[in-house]
Length: 479
Ligand code: ADP
Image (cartoon, rainbow, N blue to C red; front, top):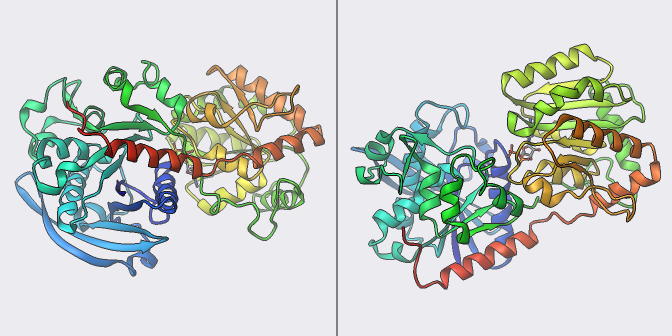
């Protein structure tokens, strides 16, 4: 089985969020199952020289972006049995950050074409192209409408994974016609039209053979208007080909047994030392009080409005509160002000810092993630692995991975509440704080959390099964 992952970011090369973690971990797991997985992504300016120096140019050609022919170099790098192809075009990708440019539609129109052309240039015709999120969502569409009759392309099947339905790639029709070279007749509600614009994500939703979401609960949720981001109608039409497979985490990457003060589910002494080191680093008093943490993009998706509504009540408890994140100014500012007003309790770091993130996971007791919606979420799984108990809202992947502690049975690996309501969250938070005071009970829940299997093995097996089922189908999806 040959699979090509087309994705806009991938660990360890470049990361802005969970998508990169998935693109980094899943191919390695699939490789273990004997699948020949290769990954293709842009060669961004932010990729470190350590990797760039080891890349080898294997192809050079040009790619049509409307009437222009743009340079495309393919550079290869191998690690752990996985081949990575980097699409090199400095004009589009050698920039100071990943996203947020005015020509975003053009950048990923170019990348779409580059991936499709690279397949022929490299003569690597995969059984399946697995595309991820809007950046690569036009690949299945163009494959079917334009590349179908070109030799080896005819047998390629497509899987499209929705990591976040909120980001869709909505652009004027000129991106479709003038840059992607797609005929005007597809500017129609049955195809790419979306409220007077074109929509990259919709391209995949109508054309991919299989659509997956990164958790089973999110799959059910996005069929409803509340979570459907105005695409629930389109998704309903594909309900039979919609599959939810929960993400895992790379347990080699997130390993409490590593580092200066390792700890294990059976021996938490090291965790205490990690907590003290964290308190010291952030200039918090070294006391045995619950350390509550948030590591997140600071956007409305993450449920920060709930925290904003009741933070003063949360801080009435004897706790320490740590926030690491960046995002919308209003939340950044809210947390900055909270830190200034509560110098003995609250620490806020605005920015993206993977090393500090790990130290916070290792040292904190409760990890707060009350998301409004959450396709899967990795933070709660990483937290569990480090014995920080997740306190989450029961939505999407949070609902599939966190099971609220049950006093009767002693089961559960965290705390959860159902409604998007600040007082429901506050009630659950207070419950967690009271349980923290019962040392034995707390240790039990921490043990449950640390022993929860969130590794990739099971999910990789499911994806592999999906690829096999798909390639045994006699026809690809007709739209
Ligand atoms: P999303 O992809 O929606 O941002 P996820 O929970 O799926 O959320 O993944 C977020 C990932 O990014 C996790 O690995 C988390 O630890 C990491 N992360 C988020 N914010 C920061 C930050 N400010 N610094 C370091 N890592 C962060």
